[in-house]
Image (cartoon, rainbow, N blue to C red; front, top):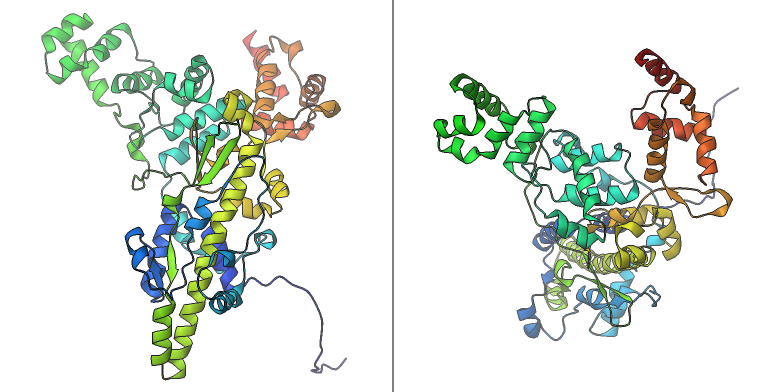
Length: 494
């Protein structure tokens, strides 16, 4: 068969991600600190962009087109209000032809059609992310994911881990945390005990004594004499060995050995992990309870950039431009400036819409505490607001909500669920892991050992619809051996 070249015309459909949409998606997933750095860079590169400072607003020229992101910040929502998409162009001030010209640059950003299509912007800094040392918080959250806790315990543990400083010490009061989360203080104490079992040993301690005590317990060296030494660390700091010997009831040689053991411990267990510059997280959204009992959701205007497109300067440089290259540069700067302002405005509105739906779904948590945290996933929120799951995922990354119960990352409110039998209320995956662990811990002899199939039957009797392979996956994640191995161990113990 001879090969030959020919021309063909084919018609097809495809989603094209323009550079403007790439920028809009990139802005959506930035935190408020990263967004501020990005905007600063754009202000340096684009001469037509200006920061709208409050004291400069009165001096702005009358012919300037001001598109204020604060308009979106002032927009708020009660839980009985439906959020409609509003074109950012409706907030532009100035002459109508100018507003129309801005709209012609690219139009509003349609987030509902932004799927998982990749683009080069997502790979920015990928090498740095792969080579970056894991932080202490990331290390603790990784261990939390396989700890097999219930949803309530995971919610409490997340708050406690976020309160651990770079040295590994817990910097919040447990009683205050329990009151804020609306749970028993005993539950917070129990969860803190689980965190004390995480690596590095000593993490989550409230003071130096507790940190050293946890490390000594792991080495099985926490005897009464060592406890007395930890109770009198101030004497050790003053090198009052005579008083230490009397307090511990030991002689000189034993005291030297005990002090040597203390010196071998780590007073800052978190120092071995990679750290990032400590910056206070500012909430992107505020949630407040109104007088009518509704939850009022509003954006934090302090974290939103206020930008101006300087039409006066644009007109001046356009007249001065002579060559085609200069004219193209001015036109490109104008298009980029208009699109950036519109993208920032749409970003703010999208965050507000997602946050409002999260609050609507988790209103029981806000009203009654962590005991009432419901299973929630990205798909539920995406379907409720008419957006793609990937868009919701980008919005909830590194975004924080300030509520009457504290400030939480948006992802805090998302927990997985296991379907219930006979159409009952769904169970969270963490609670199912807990049920599996309780069933296995209740095994007293060889005859009581449950296979994975038997565990499925017992869970279905309890109203949990789960597959055998899921039980096996959860069991392996909790590092529980198979039924054959458990039966062998019980037989050897007898």
